[in-house]
Image 1 (cartoon, rainbow, N blue to C red):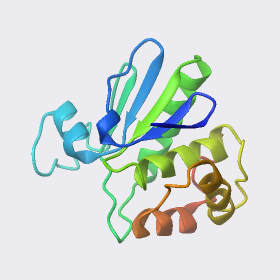
Image 2 (image 1 turned 60 degrees about the vertical axis):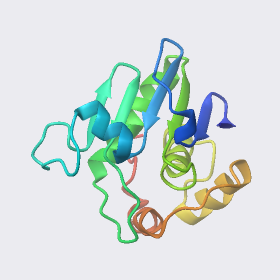
Image 3 (image 1 turned 45 degrees about the horizontal axis):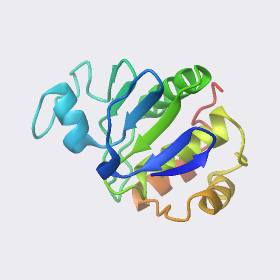
Image 4 (image 1 turned 45 degrees about the vertical axis):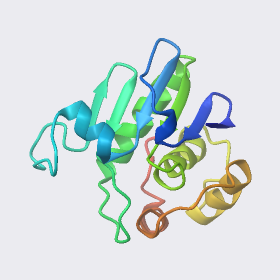
Length: 160
């Protein structure tokens, strides 16, 4: 687990924990976290109310995979930013994890630092990525998330 900014941590599944009074956790992995929290195996119908996200107190479970072709939905990133900002503003630590701690979780942390906290350059995904990699050298975004962020950067988190 690595602190990338004050109270913002990125990690892999080995550090998966439950949220608490002082810690909010973003589980950025379909398997096993989202599946376990929502209670399904395989695929979930996209008509399910928790298809993209399930928020339970200090835990946010995301149905997010890291395919080579971007299949992401903007609502997932909006839900993440709202959750992260709310809990960070409440003084909690924010732990963001995915399976390997290399692509999804750090990409979300990058988005949060650039768009919600504005502590790294947010003029483009490339400039934000360059600054973030100084904070988290393990950042290896998958092709899909890299493509999605590059193509949609101007729209991501525009409410902040």
